[in-house]
Image (cartoon, rainbow, N blue to C red; front, side):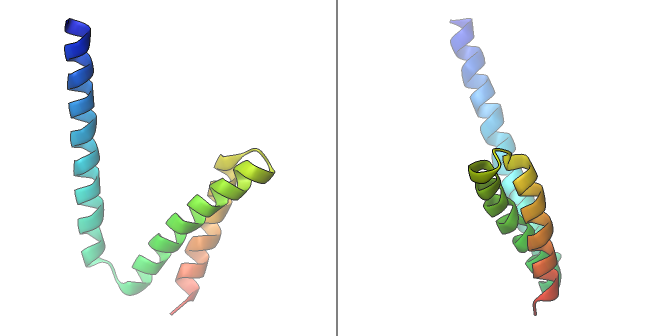
Length: 80
């Protein structure tokens, strides 16, 4: 019985942390300039795309995510 209770508590704590993270992350975008928002979204999109491509081609999604995030952030900073 205590294992089940421990798992339920862990799930509840993890869900609470995830919700708090989402609220803080989304609310912080409201004070950003449009350029900062483009850089952040470009980095996020680039990281996801880079992880997919890096995992599929080179077998290293972390390296692909790092390269994609850098390229995405640069593209976001350069666009208007």
